[in-house]
Length: 214
Image 1 (cartoon, rainbow, N blue to C red):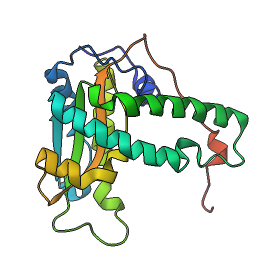
Image 2: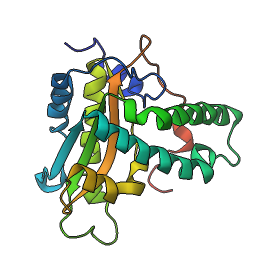
Image 3: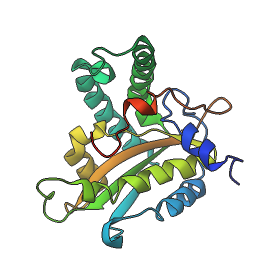
Image 4: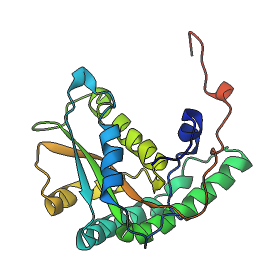
């Protein structure tokens, strides 16, 4: 059963959930698999569908991934973290990033306890292609976002995370990922606390929109 959300509500209230992930409530795997089945309808270049998905529920594996994530986040935080691009930002934007930083701190501490980790991978062959890789990652990341939307419709929260990639090789060895596959995004998934979500503050469209020329 899915939540009674309009398409616009679903698209504008699917947030990266960090502090509100319920760490203690078990997540039925059939809900995760339903959301992934929806995700497989996402577009891929030349209809390649060259993705693979790992659903990780083993407590020891999640704990080890969580520790890699925590160490990577510490390095990220030391380099300025979510606030490093705030020069000349508005007070509202600064306040928003303060909240993001607080929630990111929390997720880094509890990542290993989130009930389900969904790891999206894509086949690259012997090595990543040189130059612009938009086509490669554009064949994976839309599906990952579709998974988040489908999970939200089923009452689950998730967060878009990539900091684990600092330890991509170690995590690949831990999970037995073949060398021909690269990881794209890690989506911790759980039920969420509270009632619902609201759209996030964003800069007005006019500040980023161009017609015909920049």
